[in-house]
Image (tube, rainbow, N blue to C red; front, side, top):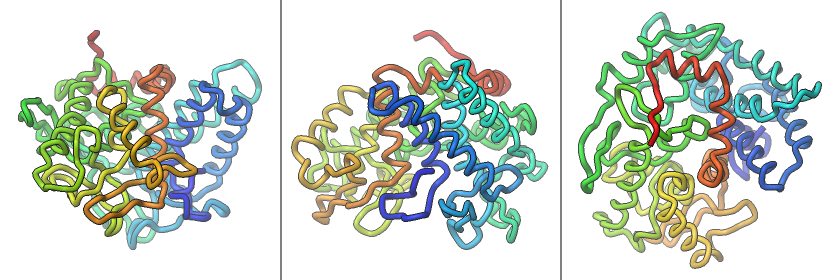
Length: 380
């Protein structure tokens, strides 16, 4: 399992583990890791998950990585977290499809993944309504009462919930709960670019990353959006905001850009243009530009070169680029966070080869879920 951050000790994160599994698959293809080593690691992860605390099949956000017992994420968030669970399952399904050889160990992994994710009771998390709820606690029930509604990072939840062969939710949950009967549609133009969904100016860039590590947005449509256009324009709008720099922050430019959730000089928070869906306080987060590599390869490569060649001494460390920096405050993070590091590896590989998109999209259950919800692909 993946630590929440490099300083977390035994505290591990479920969503970040899903991202890490996908990053390890990229590592096999690039010769950094051995196939057998990663297979063994993913089987260990499955064993941990099988013995960890579960909540109507869902996993918690945080666990003690030694005992498998839940560590509360907040006062009432001490049970199932359906969004983190979906990001974990996204990685497990990618591994299930990648390890496709006819060997006893690879066959056992495929069966193990199916058993684990088929046990998730997505229907329970609807409370009998046409919407999914983010949290359930054995101590507080549904008191947090957080609906999973778009547009944000959580599209994967509804795709997997619809795809489940055991506890599927209806298409009505997607249209009424996630799409809010069409109210997640934006349709405005920002810097002359149309944005199909979400906040003004798009919000933090992790919206374009987390569910799309496995879900291939190339040519993907439904009645609400062209998802390639959504993610590409979201990225370009975020970058253009940094170029225009209405907040007059130090050194924002065409090669120093990218607002998303990360550490900053004042804690941890989401960062976004004009404070829509986050705060712009001068913090640039490398994962924002780098995990957008498939959408904006030239612009993301320009940022990568600047981060590496000009900011190397302050920004580069043993695990790659540190989490964030803020020139206004003369501050560089010393942290690495799983949900920021993992997408960099996965999305660069998706840009180079489409590998993680290809393996995740091989899964028949995923195809069934997409079809059920009305998604379709158009050739570019």
